[in-house]
Structures are given as structure tokens and as C-alpha cells.
Length: 68
Length: 139
Image (cartoon, rainbow over all chains, first blue to last red; front, side, top):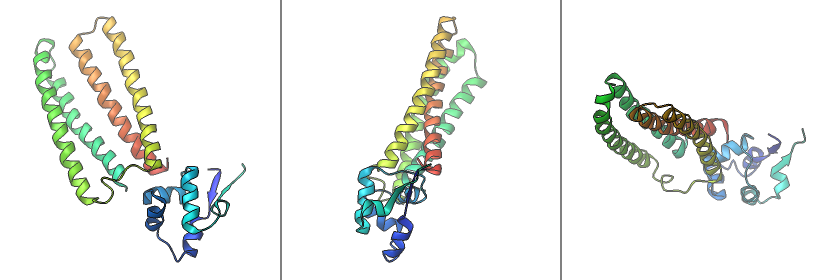
């Protein structure tokens, strides 16, 4: 997938925030967070902003587009 | 495994068992004059069984997932549902078009009616499999 993310590192930096806790903040299921974190699913723009907001960082600090 | 993936497994197992039983029973007793009466009674029994099994299994599933059972689908689950519905609708369309051809070629109407029902069941099975595969591999 062309979109990569730093969610695992950001969860670690946020006191090892659990996937479930992040899912509840974003308003999706834990399975969706797992799929996003493993680059198996590209979230909508709104969900991407919610994830960035959950970590208190800018969107580009969470997601980056990998040119192929 | 998420609640919705388990729900897809419930649908897959329910349709496979109930309509597998229906079509197996019908095929073993297939005789054009006999099948007309048999298929109506069997079909009513299969539909009733489908409803009962689906309700019981979904209630049991909801008891194990009290928080997520009533939660609306998130964006990935919605995308997976739509993809699975699209694949299922293609499957059903192919079955219907083929069976219109069969009717025009003079196939027995009760046989065609049961094959239409089979198309509907296969489309539901394809939908459940597509959901499960999508939940497993991503979206």
C-alpha cells in the first residue's frame, strides 16, 4: 500500500496506548486500527485526522505517502 | 475476530447448513411430479429453520459482544459490506440471466425456481465469504 504510518511508534510514545484505546478515541473498531497500523487499510481523511488528533500531532506526522 | 466477522461466519454456516439440507433432501427425492409438493413444504421448513438458527446464533453472539453488538459499522466495515454486496449481486445476476435462458429453452419451471433459489443462496454464501476474506486480508 502506498500510504505508510507511524501509529505503532506514536502509541509507544503515548505511554503504550492500546489499540483499543485508540480505536475508542477515533470511533472505529480495534480491528480497523490493526488493519491501518499494518498498512492493510487506508483510512478516510476524517479518520486520519481523528488518529492524528488522538496523538496531538499533525496529520503528516502520522501518515506519509510512499511514492512507488 | 470482530463481531461483524463472526456475524459473517454465522450467516455462512446458517445458509450452508439449512439450504445444504434443503437441496440435498430435494435432490435425493427429485421427481418432477413429486418435487412440486415436496419443494414447497421443504422451502417453508428451510426458511423457518433459517430464521430460528440465525436468531439464536446472533443472540448468542450478541451476548458475548455486548458492547459492539449494537454499535454502528465503522468505515472499514461499511466498505467491506459494500464490496461483498457488489460481488454477491454479480453472482446473483449471472445465475438469474442463465436461468432466464434455461426457461426459454423449456426447462421445468420447478427446477428453474429451485435453481433461482440456489442462486440466491450461493450469492449469500459468496457475500459471507467475501466479507470474511476482506476482514482477514484488510479491506
